[in-house]
Each structure stands twice: as C-alpha cells, then as structure tokens.
Amino acid sequence: MGLVVYNTLTRKKERFEPVTPGKIGIYVCGPTVYRPSHIGHAVGPIIFDAIKRYLVYSGYDVTWVVNVTDVDDKLIVEADAQNTTTEELAQRITKDYLDAMATLHVDTVDIMPKASEHMGDIISLIESLCEKDLAYVSNGDVYFDVAKDADYGKLSNRRLEDQEGQRDLQSGEKRNAGDFALWKAAKPEEPDEVKFNSPWGKGRPGWHIECSAMSMRYLGETFDMHGGGMDLVFPHHENEIAQSESASGKPFAKYWMHNGLTKVNTKKISKSDASPEMQAALMKMTLHNLLEEYPGELIRYFVLSTQYRRPIEYSEEEIESKRKGLETFYRLFERVERICGTSPYEKAGELGEPKGPVSEEVGSGTLAATFDEQIAAFKRAMDDDFNTAGAIAAMFEIAAAVNRFIEQEKLETTGADAAKKDLLTAAGRLITVARLIGLFIDPPQKKSAEGDGLADKAMQVLIHIRQHLRKKKDFETADMIRDMLSEAKITLEDRPDGTIWRAE
Ligand SMILES: [Zn+2]
Image (tube, rainbow, N blue to C red; front, side):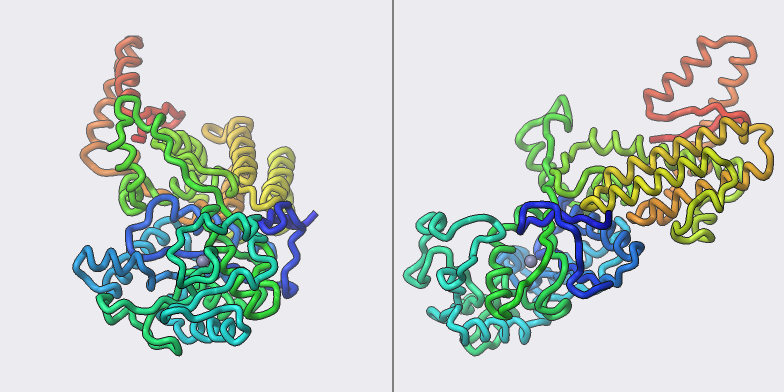
C-alpha cells in the first residue's frame, strides 16, 4: 500500500511521493529561544524524530532541519527584562532545549540553523521579492504585499477579504492590513547585537522570512515535508508559502504536516486544587521541570501514544496511566533477563533492524506467527500517516505473545534451553521494532530491587517477614504488609525464584 500522509494543504491523506526519488527533506519550525520550553515544544520534535527513524528504516535518505529562532522581538524584550544580551539569553535557552531533546532521545536532527547566522540568505530572499515588486519598503520596514499573491490563504483556507479590517491597523505604513513584515527597521533604543546591516538600513528580519530562507537554503526551493504545531498554520506557515513560492516561482513544501496541540486538563490534575494559580503554574511547567520529575522515555512514550494530529491531553493522571503501559514492557524485559541471564537490550544490538520474517529467527510457530503479523500491523500503522498509537498497540500484542510463550513453555521453572534462546531473540526483536520509533534505545534507569542500598535493605526485611508470616499461614498480616506497601506505591511481585519489589 505504501506510505500515506495527511496534507494540510489539500486537507486529505495523500500517497507519499518524494520530490527526488529515494530522498526526503523535512523542515520543522524550531524554538524561539527566549523562554524555557514547555511540554508543547517537545511534541513536534518527538513526533518527527519517530517519523525520521521510520523513514530511514523504510529506505529513504532523509535530511531533517530544525531551525533556532534567535532573532526575534520576544528575545529583545526578555533579554532586557533579565538585564542580559540577546546572545547570552539565546545561548542559555538553546542549551536548555538541546539538553531536553537529548533526554527525550530526539537525536536524529541533521541541521539546526540559527537565524542570526543566515542574514545573507534572508536578505537576498527579501531582495528578490522587492525586485519582483511583491514587497515594498515603508519607513525602513519591508512588507510583503499579500494583494499581489493570487493564492494567498491556500494553506489556512482564509480569503484575503476576510482579513481586511480585522487585523490591527497600525497601517498608514502598510498597503493592506494583511501585509506582514519581512524586515523591521531598528529602533534607537534596541541593543546593537540585533541591528543587522541591510540594503534598507539597520534592522532585523521578520520571523516568517527566517524559516523560508533557512529551509530553502538546506533543502532546496521545493522539498518534501514541512512540519509544526497546528497553531503555526496561520499566519506563520501561510506567510512562509507566500514568500517562498513568490520568490522561487516553484512549489515550496509538498506535504504540510501539523501536530495537535497540548491541552492541559486541569480537572484531572488534582481533585483538591484546580485553582487559577494551579492552572497558571501548570501552563508554565517547563520541559526542564517535567524531565526532573519523569523519565524522558515516559514523556516520549506519552507523546507517541496519540496519533500526532490529535490534541494531547496533558495531566499527571494521563502520564501515570501511560507509565503503567510502559512498565508492561520493562517488566517483560526484566523477566526475560532473569530467565535467560542476558539483557534483551544487548540481544537487540546484535539483531539489528527487523528485516526478514521472525520465523527464521524464532523457532516457535505461534510466537513467530504473532510476531510477523504484528510487525506488519506496526508498519501498516506507521504507513498510515505515522500512526504511532497504532504502532504501540502492535508492540503490546507482541509483548503479550512473548509473555504467553514464557507461561506455555514454563520458562520460569523448567523450560528447555532452546525455548529460552527463542525467548531472548523474541524480546530482543521486540526492542528493535520499538526502536523504529525511538523507544527502548537504552535500558530504563532502575529504581527497583537493585536500586539504592538503604531502601532495598529495608524492603528485604519486609519481604522476609512477609514470607515468614505466610509460612505460618498468617495470611491476614502478610496481605496487610503487601496492601500497605501498595498504598505507598511499592509493588511486591511473587515469582518462582523469590519476591521482588518495585517503586513507582
Ligand atoms: Zn517556521
């Protein structure tokens, strides 16, 4: 069937055909580095990182560009408020962003161009629009003349007439209310580092033109995928199209992909406190703080559990419920390691990407059959507009089949060595499938039995007492220990080779 992508431009799913056979260029609008990122800023990068991994696995040569907006009005205001330079602010916030991306395993971006380092590209793009009389100079500013762009509004489906008179009329300077700035003249009170030389005097570029210039610089005038949040459709992406296509006379991006926005569900956050202060605090919750509280893989898994075009509902309870799903896999991998004496993560490294049918790797008929069926389901989901939620559902089916195999073959007690070998291969293979969307790259950091010393020692005492009580048939007290631990979010698991504990 092949890959199908929903295109905002045509408002339908289309069969994907790259501009150049075998190659794909992707541009995703990156952060404006003036304030620490929040959860919403992580959604696009996580999704496109998964998309890139899958496209590379599918055989494409992919170049992925994410820009950094380090020249913008917001930076000037914030740097002034913090009594620092825009450069220092941009560097600090960019570092914070990159650290968060690394924790989330967003590590397939190829190029991260900064606006401040592309003034030449930006200025020559504006010049070519002026030469074609599609842009005009007014008081040192340069504006794009939307009235001269016949198909302006095609992405957001807005007609120019609808906008007239609706936008704030700071005009007198502008010909049409919808005209937007390509270049803004420097104001005397602004710091020197944001005053760039140009044919129109000192100033700085508008945000939209930065993205047009940098995307075309690295991916060519026509490239494959342009992504960003739904909130960027208008005016940002509409204006990118207008500028780029007017300048080049060619189609700009072929497929426009927009991810759903993050909704903070305050009702579910806390039954006791959904006050406005609480809401404000949550909206401000930075990625940095979030990643101190939750592992990066959990946030990534949380984002990928929803198809990218749908809104993501963020609340602590949603994250906790996803944690349970993720732990299903972690427990399976631990179980396999206990049985086989080797980590399935290690085995995954040996196996490499999934290629041929799993039946050639795993002897057992039913296990291999489920595997092949579910790997096909995984690919079908990803080929259907990158439905990562469907791909994760297939991973769950595989995990369930591997757990069933352990039971059937009694691998925790008396199982045969050949079956254990198959088990290790199967678990390793599951990891390699998950890695196609960037999950299970590294083993999770353990907080359980092998974890920090003192807690474990205390837990071993409790486990020992509980076993003793059960031997004496005092099940009531034994169960009380387990229930009280459960309330404290510590789980005891009785296994053939002893009891282990795990804290949430
Ligand atoms: Zn952009």
